[in-house]
Image (cartoon, rainbow, N blue to C red; front, top):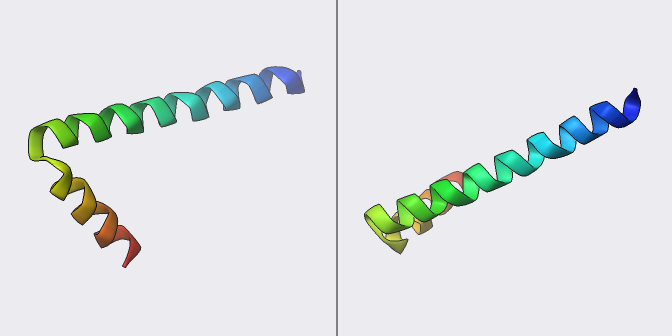
Length: 45
């Protein structure tokens, strides 16, 4: 039973990573690299 939950958690994390990567590429294509750099700076500073 625990192995099923671990697999589901792993798949969920992988799906989030794929979605974040896809969103990053969409933002890069729409607004250029400056938008992503500004976004990262806003969250980190």
